[in-house]
Length: 70
Image (tube, rainbow, N blue to C red; front, side):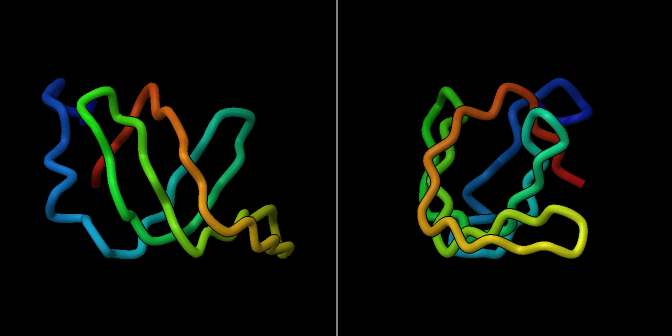
């Protein structure tokens, strides 16, 4: 959900680079390729960022329980 309590309109973010904060303070950056009504995200060309470290992890399918779109 977004800050307003409404599901975010993710269509406008398709094929755009996103920064996503996951649980345990994990942060990934990648290109949104798809999503469904349950907010499962498909993110391509994904890089996990941990401080100054960056790890290429490829394609990620993730269930997002809480999403803030700023």
